[in-house]
Length: 396
Image 1 (tube, rainbow, N blue to C red):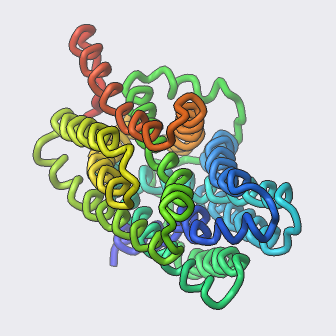
Image 2: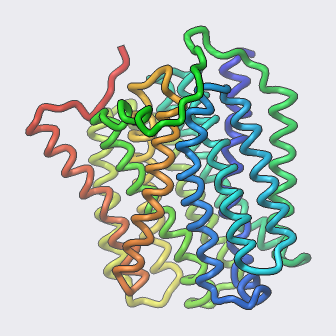
Image 3: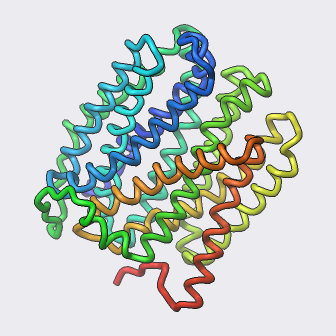
């Protein structure tokens, strides 16, 4: 078995840590609200804190990945993730839970930086897009399984069991890395001296292709984050779905996302990046329009059907932009991955939060979020045609 073949399953196991930290406890959110005697919005904030800290942590772990190695950063991230899980299990108030979630978010981001950097290292600028699509596909597997698992565990235990499961999974991944991740870095890769300086990110941010695709990743992620924030309240509180019913709806959407993420790469390869983004525009416009039309209907399917359509479009937007954002970079893959993660996670969280704050009706707010990627793609393609600038990187 070649190093690339043996590496991929380990990378996929590692990347599960990040979405697992978000998804397994979603069915427990109403119980957590009652147990800690706080408003539901305080528990919802755990998702935003996790994602925002995950984004901010990228700027520290990117240079560390380039200076101390990807595996060292991955192990550090797992340590922090486990620490956050232990704190969550032992908390007695919401403020400690927020701290624990921030620590877990930082740990999850370190693991993600390591995975994305290693993907660019071993698969190159051309192959990275395909592998990132598979990674995203696995990320979507977790929402299909984790809420169902969380709902099943809640039938026998209280909400803390979700964080116990997070801790045990992270321990297993750490053992897997320790025993099996012994592939050598590519010959061209030379780790540099640690340099935490915002100036180190300037050459990456100055790259026009990176800015366009990283921003598209952020707007696409805003849809995911908005959905994560809204769906427990919309389905379980407003529409009286049980935790298991919520998990089933969540799982169906995840299955749609999985299919999209694993089929999009072959379509992207066949039709090209630009046409694939046009496909993403179509799904963005359709999903947003249907969500607006059905916004006054109190039905689970009226809320979830547009989400299914949006999830298909996300397979194309992530499939193109995830790889294209990192493609121009070689020795700075760690910093490029970190900056992409910062823009995608924290930027997406800020966009989703801003729209939720501005648009009072939650369903209309998510419809607006669904519309943003298509607006960005169209404006980018128009600017590119007028200025003759290149938005797509082609490996030589």
